[in-house]
Length: 475
Ligand code: AMP
Ligand code: SF4
Image (cartoon, rainbow, N blue to C red):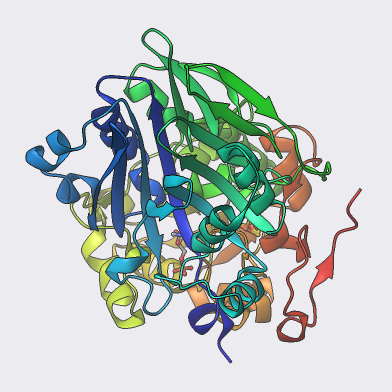
């Protein structure tokens, strides 16, 4: 059975929330704009005005989902928002848009979640046996139901009880009519930061780049396992209600996913990508190359680092058409193939007769790299040396980054030499795991690298599907 597409709905997402600001929904709208790279399929904002929950959600980019009158309708001084991308069959249906809003015995509640629960299927079955009726196929709804069922006194206590029963990754925003709660899973897999804007208004965001846009001050990262409650009087309370776990921030945020101008857990993403490129040049030099060319946009910072460290000139030999969405958001293989061509164009004047170092961040299925290598060669390159600024992606992600099943990952069944043949490059090399850590933060502690190593920090229940799964010892 194809686990990824049938049984397991997971998303790449971004979340943003504002508490105690007259323009709460407008700020969330801007915040979601800055987080658009984290999800392009749907967007939504929920605000609270005089105990009423007001909602706008829709399919498409932030710019398309919210019209002026809809934004004006999102009144109130607290709001949370969400951008989402998912591939899984059926999950693009309208009921799967976030934030989720429900009425409970304790009043209204809204929730926005970035991440993926590994025990969602079991929890959902258990809840359904108890009579819960699910509206969507999203993992998040499990947390919503568990919170609604809790008999604890406060909203925060009910949410904590719910989160105590789920396993997996989350950067979560939950809102009732009095407060917004930001929570990060005990491993800290997905990022979440806290900011302040104006006089006593608080902001939660998946990434710091969205704080910069609304001129909010960065306060700090929400810590792994931390639950931060803001409200009802604008005060901030912080709890660590769960057993301490090994910190496992997703290393792939630095490689590809986060925006380069964000800082995650104190490390600037752009700077780390440049260092990664420098390290790549040291590990896998191409002495006779004439030019270093990035695959835009994902390969640009690493290519700059490669050029800087090797002394080989950097040129933008491939131009990206910015009016085409990411190839990856096209759900069909047939469209993906087509997508690469409309999106990227090689510049023959720049490339003809040259030995080219082509830099990209990762090889997933290999289709993108193959197309681009062929395109660069067709533009007249004498040789094409592909350098990848991460180790081979051998394992799928179960914690909220969309990757295909293991069998579709080129590196899961091909050696580097076989991959080189497939992508038709003259040479192919990947950054080492140690090199990646050295370049990101100088140490290998505190990261998840399961998609490169197979060491999954949170056990995934369906081991029979993945016999090679090896589990990290939790300390
Ligand atoms: P592929 O053609 O499947 O090998 O895709 C590789 C390209 O997809 C690289 O250029 C990456 O920048 C990009 N990529 C890697 N992982 C993801 C992801 N999870 N979501 C979207 N794009 C990705
Ligand atoms: Fe990130 Fe890879 Fe771990 Fe997923 S498996 S959380 S993409 S490092």
